[in-house]
Image 1 (cartoon, rainbow, N blue to C red):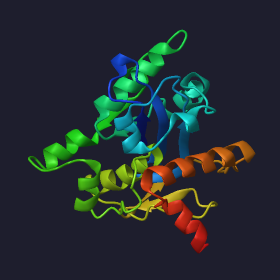
Image 2 (cartoon, rainbow, N blue to C red):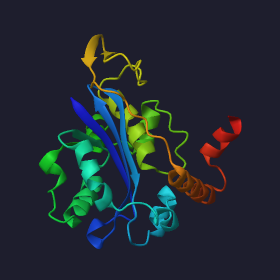
Image 3 (cartoon, helix red, strand yellow):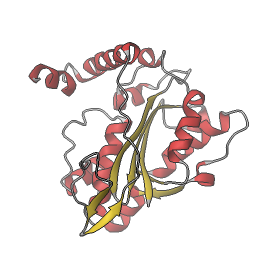
Image 4 (cartoon, helix red, strand yellow):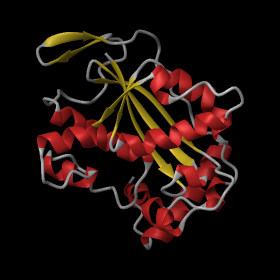
Length: 237
């Protein structure tokens, strides 16, 4: 079974008022195992970012100015998620934004529900833990998923945390690390699960991407009062 753990960051809360997706984070999972494939893009929204949203994710309009637009990455993203089950926390929110982005494309390819199934982990958590807090941070604490680096929201970071929470909520998991590159199977709950074949391609950041990364770190520095975890790790290295 192929699943994609997905999260977005946006300029605000209401796609019907023209708010846009500004970050997409996706992690591919096959038979409850990471494949090593991810899709992560920042996106230029061509509009302002609400102050409340900026406080949540720290992604500034200045940082996004030189990023691609959704239309520029749509084909690649659709290929990544097509025919997968999307695992999303509070799925109606993200799906509404993604449907709005798809509707803006020339010759719109349709809606998310036309080419993907969707699993809402918030709805699942509410069934498992009625009357309790079921936000991502609360679930990380409940299932002992380390979210200590989550000072600000980020689509890929949150997708990674959601993967840990989802596996724990639905029966636990083995180690989440990739097996040796030459091994095409991974042991899960006492049985062998087939993994996609093929050579794993690891793209390296170019000069423009490194510059964008530095601008992003500066934005996080400003939003967090200089408590950027990445900077601390660089100093320790």
